[in-house]
Image (tube, rainbow, N blue to C red; front, side, top):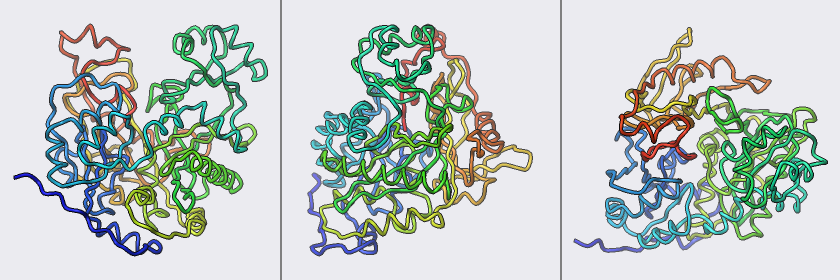
Length: 500
């Protein structure tokens, strides 16, 4: 029987403040979907928003998550991006049948393109994000830098230009010193950020720099990484507290500049730096609003460890890998998760909100609890088929640093102490691992770095313990040539591009 569409009744009155807004979402009857490779970025959203479902390519929960739909795999071309995964899902008959059976709805994505927008319209889904063309424009690291500098936000000293040779690089960067950082306009920082001090470094990366248009050439500093997530609303920009970033730890990632986790805790950095980051984020929010952007965004800041000066690093105009930790911290749960302010902009309802009061409350260190997350990748230059993988759930660490599986769970707040952690598995039995493949995410209470921004002993024990539960065998003989160490697998598995 063909599904009969029904119009969802929306309140005719204006929602006044957080109590009204939270009740509105608890009573929501509009189907809302987060469509992505995994559901990690918005894990727990279904507990806040009625009729919220996940449509994913990877089932991190082995069929046990109550609001997760993963269609049976069908033949498809090799995935090159998350956009490819999302478009595959939207074209999948099982997904189409599932969505149409529930009526017109709304969709959220981590990454999407114009084709994603078209496919969503065909399924009667409204994309609850700014247009893909605008997001793509703002995602350009050079555009971000120009917008920031025009707004008076400090960036690491830089020049932006096309570079054709090592001599050209040195001529352009004459005022920036000998040690340089070169970034291309797009891409994951772990793959598209290059440290260049001499001609040998240049030769290693020249093919990825020459002929690709303008790049950003920066003075190399000794940075401490930070992240701030925020949301542009019709009433102003809501800014979450500053987080530390874990970057380039070889136990977690093979990429020298690769993001591999976050921490959130009271009094991260000093009050002056926190205020600077908050003010810069508010200023960027106003710039984005003028560009026609609304909703979720994240800024990476770099703090020069030699001078304590704060610089804007880059922007992600989207939900990010840090969103899970932002949306589950105490400051957020005491009001409502940041992603819900984003979603509210697309819910066809008028509302009032005291953004300044929320920002004051969220800036108070007393409202911030302490959490950390680790993103684990396969770091060896080797390829194998996974034969054993640790399940998603709560894991425990004993006094000697040994870990064991405790129980299945989906919620990090069921982590009771620093001796427990929620592990969300990404790569499973039958998947390939290879250098850079995403294995999973571990979330625990407490800090994962010391005050010198190095991994602490507990973090190292968690990393070693979880990785010890992964085992792999050699790939089938017919795939050995294509799956040589250093090559990306042709098998469509997670990890051949950034999933988070």
